[in-house]
Image (cartoon, rainbow, N blue to C red; front, side, top):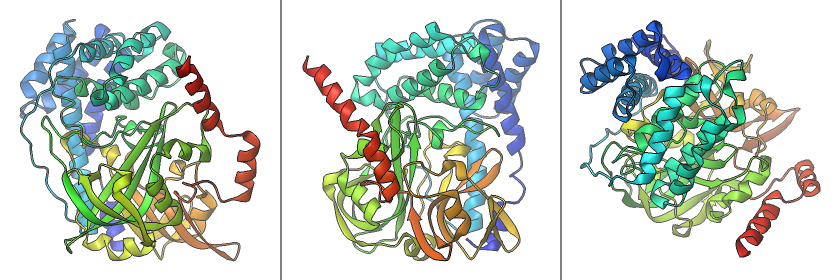
Amino acid sequence: MLGVQLAELTGAAPDGTEEALDLVAGFDDALAHGLGRLGGERSAALTALAGALDATPLGPAVREAAEKIAAGSVTDEHLAALAGGRTALFGAVHDALLGRLDAALGRTRAGWAEAAIETDAEAPLLGAARSWLQELAITGWRGVDHDLVSASDQAVEALLADPGARRLAVLLDGLAAELRASSPVATMERLPVRRWADLWARALLLCRPGGRSGLVGREEPGGRSGLVGREEPRGRSGPVGREEQGSAGREEPTQVSGRLLILGVDVHEHATAVQAQVHAVLEPAGGARPRVVRVSVGAAKVDTIVGPAVWRLLDAHPTLLGALAERRGLDITDMPLAASGDLIWHDDRAALAEPADPFVTARVLLPEAAFPAVPPLERHPVRIAEPVLVEGHRTGDGAVELDGHTLALDLDRLPGLGPLTPAMVTAAEACVGLVRWDGGRWTLQPLAVRGTLKRKPFEAHGGDWAMGPTDPKVVKAEAKAGDAVAVLRERAGRLLRR
């Protein structure tokens, strides 16, 4: 990234951005206090949301929903319309911001091709999930207590038993876990209003008939980044899930082969799940244009498993973890690739290749690579996470500076299961990272850094400890603490044998 590109990127926000986000904030405030007891100001917020969508196909449905809910009638259909309207506003903001980024960096991006409508049959378990989400909306976050959270248990358990509903189940389970940990919510001084509203809206849309048919990629179970979002000191958030959904129809993946060159890994942690999302460049067999892709693998977890031990939960993917730890490329054969740019990972279709320097990959291939389309329900500002290479910069006051222009560093996203530290980022002379838009500003999340610290050259990547930590102090601490993953697996196996 050059200074001139940074200047173009970090200029004034696209027209209408603040107005759209204000409309969403008004709806979220109403949801926090409960749609079953709207006052005049919060009824007006719903009316304003509907007014902004009047000229769109959603307009009539959202306006009717706003009127009916203000009058005291809160139905499943009305809530779905409002959730759809809120999602559409975020989609418009996302498109404007991503267009700004692509223009600044000179990137080309594929458009999204609509697929044929494919509607799932109505299932009782979807109805149970919608019923719980409706109760949340009527009650509002301020009214949530342990009894209301526990009402989700049966629906989540049923969804977890259905492989086709697993992503929705993880989303609901994550939301319920956060609400349970915060209950009674009325005692909280400050609520993560946008985050919970994002989770609620995404879940409600996904458990509509047809909502699951577009799921083709990854879920992002939660934690400090991605569509699950984070706590919001500056309004941060995003829907949990980062499931690659498509719209109402299914976009069938294509089979690809070639060389996969890793740029870095972004790990998303939640108390109940973890996901490693690998950003990479695919050099297709046959010499086609390189493509930017993502690989996401996840696992269920418990909140006692933290730090480098989290990698052990992903040991079903040893080839991918080996490539991360050894900084090697991968030769892949007939791997499904979704239109969203997500490789549907099969570890047995990949083989370790020669060492591949992520900094060289970013410098040589990113400028000429094609970038993937964004599925409609993925269009949320917080999902923007675009790989870049920053070199020749200065670092200070929590930001990188290029030719007098600054980009804030997002050090909160540094994973606790790798060697990357704030001191390394500050001393870095080159950084491969993800440009994000969060809390009303552009930020850079480091994935790999290279530089000199205390007169010694260093290079650190977020996935360096994917096969186990290499720092002797960390190894010693882990040995002393014991293998929590092995203990929990042994206990789970003992329970299943009974």
